[in-house]
Image: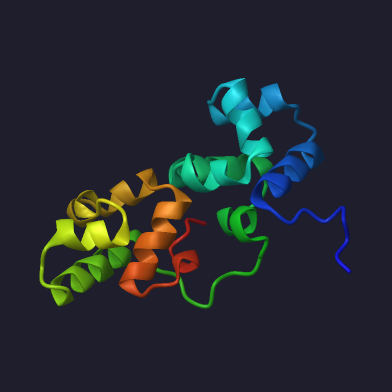
Length: 150
């Protein structure tokens, strides 16, 4: 049987880490640069960190809480077997687009996200939410966890 005090969702892990860090909600919101309400939603609803926060915001949150983005999202602190840079991820998307007929808009529509900005500039990946990263990586045949920022 699982330990009921063990955080099992991203929002629970975030709350537990904030409490361990001795921060109240207002302090954590201020450090992250979001409103109190946005931060409260982050701890109240598991899908907030997946669908609302960008990878850049996730990285900042992880630094504030002394965690890694991977630990926040998956509960797994281990490093991935392989890491994929944003540049290599962008190249893999481009290869998948070419293999699918070369139409980035059609490929992105199938993946559920606009990938054209990521093809022009890999740094645009910072603006993706984790859900977008997961969907795009899956469509490109890449383990999304390997692309997560450190």
